[in-house]
Length: 113
Image 1 (cartoon, rainbow, N blue to C red):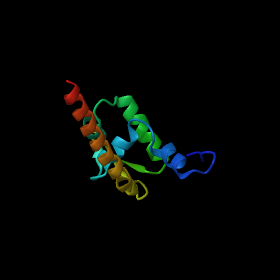
Image 2 (image 1 turned 60 degrees about the vertical axis):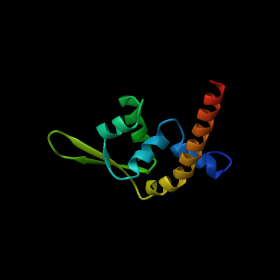
Image 3 (image 1 turned 90 degrees about the vertical axis):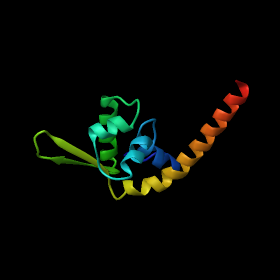
């Protein structure tokens, strides 16, 4: 990870977990290790290529680990590292805010419709 200019903690955090898919992948890894196919099903709308890219980036940033089991058929599991395991408590308030926002949007749409 490159250090963002200005030294703002928010910039540093978003450099690692920002984007459309990373927070969702991290949230789905919070309960425990998951295989690639499992994540692909849980993260609705992400392409295989994008999921692989996001996992590689998070692995490089030290928040996700990849365990390759030497089995046939091949099995790989992804999990949060100790650093990554601190993220669900950070993401939970954002998730709750999103639920409130969605309820507000749904309420406005039903009033307009």
